[in-house]
Length: 368
Ligand SMILES: NC(=O)c1ccc[n+]([C@@H]2O[C@H](COP(=O)([O-])OP(=O)(O)OC[C@H]3O[C@@H](n4cnc5c(N)ncnc54)[C@H](O)[C@@H]3O)[C@@H](O)[C@H]2O)c1
Ligand SMILES: O=C(O)C(=O)C[C@@H](O)[C@H](O)[C@H](O)COP(=O)(O)O
Ligand SMILES: [Zn+2]
Image (tube, protein in one colour):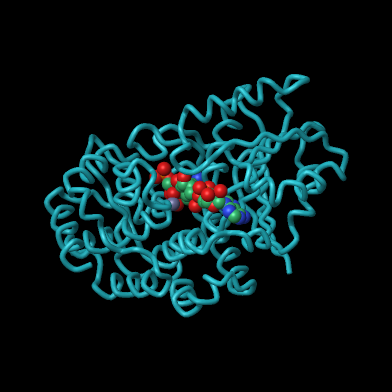
């Protein structure tokens, strides 16, 4: 069964998220519907392209599109301006030269999607692009909403742009080749939606932890569609994180991003860092008198069921983490702001005095 989730935006930039088993073979039609010329460039990673690229290319060519493909090594430690330079080089070398009506296709996980999105936002001052996510994390989160960019030094996603895709095409079949650790990491972002927006989804994920990890089609279809709906609602209401509403999607990311940066993007999957960061946010919220203990309990129960990490690493000090939170994009004049949960399904962005953040981290180390 296929589903369509609309993303409503201003200035005719609305787009659709197409979700369905076999959707890859309809990619050509989706691309044709939005393409402003017949020129398409698919950007991916060698491993992903080897497995899924032929299907993508065939579907695009079938509808008469002219397809070039470019593959680069990815992984979070390649999500930086050096790799963006290599992507620009690859596009520059194509003949005939690309024009501004060229459509890019990001085929991959969140790293590919964020980088190709940033290239689309900047090359020739802006190209159209499609998101074709191949990880669960990218299906439930990164392919939707137009946040693009790269890491800069220890600053996670510090350089980037808002640039919405013209469509998102999700084929859950591609998850059959995804390693279990990556599936679990994707589920961390689903837990996030459960805490911030939808307690029912949190209960569902906790109860269906096993089938979800085993990529049961029905359970996966449910969490992908629901997550896309929830994210689309937020993006429609606050596309560029101006009112503070979109910031709720950053629950767990203040400490999560600091952990990724402090470990040079090589130790944790993004979802794993977010899992640990959500536990920190819950305990900091308790210290601030905002988060009830039951919320922390429900969050930890979900993470436990999914086998996601919860403990802070012993070799990274709280001071090192705090220094990085001061550079977080939500910080104001160097003061970190945290998304804290007042109840399951209700969160808000709060400035938190440094001593309460510290005591939250101390409790995190003592209790988890
Ligand atoms: N823009 C956003 O709104 C947003 C939201 C959430 C996360 N992100 C970003 O997304 C990134 C994390 O994305 P991710 O978890 O997808 O990581 P990723 O892109 O690094 O992919 C994880 C791994 O899975 C492999 N892979 C991808 N698809 C596969 C498949 N079908 N079969 C087998 N292997 C496959 C990749 O080669 C990679 O090794 C982070 O950089 C994070 O900051 C962005
Ligand atoms: O889409 C958003 O907005 C999010 O915050 C989703 C997050 O899961 C994602 O990791 C995002 O890239 C973080 O955004 P950032 O602005 O903190 O870099
Ligand atoms: Zn995230």
